[in-house]
Image 1 (cartoon, one colour):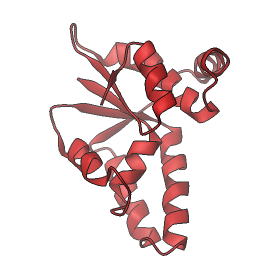
Image 2 (cartoon, helix red, strand yellow):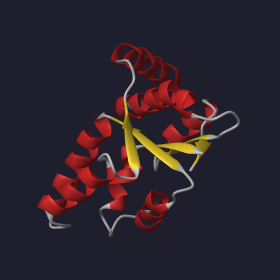
Image 3 (spheres, one colour):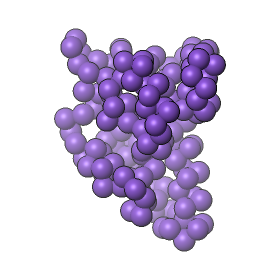
Image 4 (cartoon, rainbow, N blue to C red):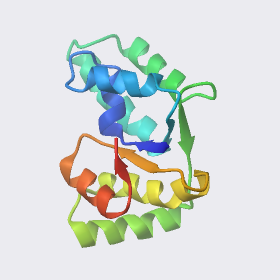
Length: 146
């Protein structure tokens, strides 16, 4: 299985006081699942970590270093890209069809555009999110919940 990680899941890996922290760290350690995320994830999660650090929930430099390591060349999460115009067109369609938030649609658009090219024949495509509306749309799009 190859699974796309939404920012809502990945941010929890670095904040021990967040619900879902243990599940996310287990997912990052699971070598049976190939993990990918989009280019904007680093920006979204960085913002969440900086806000958390400023609220006294961790060391900003340390949190950001962990994120950068996990999204780095040797990290457990590969950062993937797709044609920006295609992402925007698909995300717009998802927002209009399902009334989901723009960034949730952006992540789903990247997943549906990139995952098929990464999968082996018969391999399952997954999507990990903490957002119920986004998870529902992911399932509609044929992505298995992680």
